[in-house]
Amino acid sequence: QKEVEQDPGPLSVPEGAIVSLNCTYSNSAFQYFMWYRQYSRKGPELLMYTYSSGNKEDGRFTAQVDKSSKYISLFIRDSQPSDSATYLCASHTGGFKTIFGAGTRLFVKA
Amino acid sequence: NAGVTQTPKFQVLKTGQSMTLQCAQDMNHNSMYWYRQDPGMGLRLIYYSASEGTTDKGEVPNGYNVSRLNKREFSLRLESAAPSQTSVYFCASSEAAGLYEQYFGPGTRLTVT
Image (cartoon, rainbow over all chains, first blue to last red; front, side):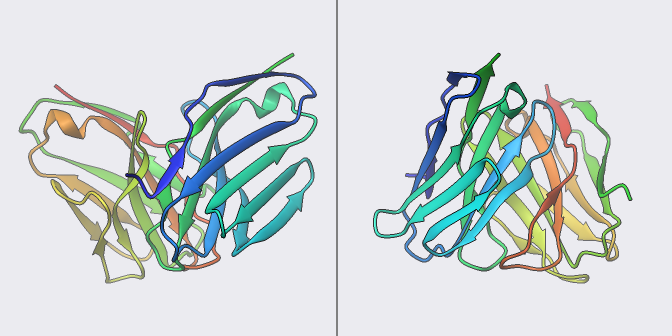
């Protein structure tokens, strides 16, 4: 079993929809939780970074961590075609070894 | 300010050949990383360098060696390439561990035939 599990999708939504992306993890020692966005044939770029449980909001993006259920979520409001990408969740314990999910491909149709 | 650069962008090798992937960062970061990305597997850490002069194994180090040449440069070497090493390789850097963003390069697409 992978330490971070993520549904690969693809997920297809109409422009303006609210998107919910989810991951589960198994390592109780994970303290740091990240969401990266990766456009086709590009390197990943950090979207959101949270420590421990709770919510974090940045513009149209909200990251949520529930440590009791080991669940990580990313919500995208008013989705745009430019949000079409692969979204990777990731976690680590505070050191250098980040564990990534497999990524969810998102398509936002105009 | 180029960020993280990688060379080459594409490479085709025959089984048993060797090659070195180069990575450089201009952000004065202490830590550097090498990942591979395969369909359905996500990014997996091969090796990392916490600071200049140190290197450590990640999840999938077998078949690879690394060198932290100086603070800017971190290379990945395949001594005897195998088809299982066909992948996209990403280099990344960060200021340190913990709550520090990793910045990724554009990737090297490697095919081993």
